[in-house]
Length: 205
Image (cartoon, rainbow, N blue to C red; front, side, top):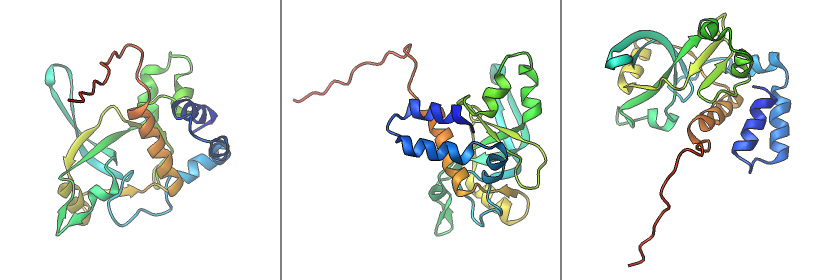
């Protein structure tokens, strides 16, 4: 996260005060600090938004509808409230997850594209979330927000409880709000001029 990301946030959400933007930039201006504050020192006990889980089945539909299934580390997108239980039943039956791809492998097809790696690591590519190595891991990852898929919430919760699935990490408070900012930029940024939508018509009758 660099000044470019802060500038992108300011352009997308002009109501961000200059003071908030300055504080944000001061927080992340040094790479070593950025790499250290993204994740909490220990994972939260309960399943939470932004949690990183190890080896979860991910399903992606490829060309001609062919399904590709692979076990990968994933990040949880659902709000923590939706993951809580009422009388033993999750509030949300399904949980949205996105896969984590090793950064060096992800970058391989883009090695001849100028500035792509820099843009990726500055997090100005809206559909990609570059993260530092989670606790216990030695390499950085790319969270591919374009590969959102759903999985049964009870499968995740029971898998963690039974030790079939392992929670790698939870986001720190700063990392959590950074993640929300990135997710908001990906899903709620202004549309291109090519999107022509009809004006809202209010019928007073």
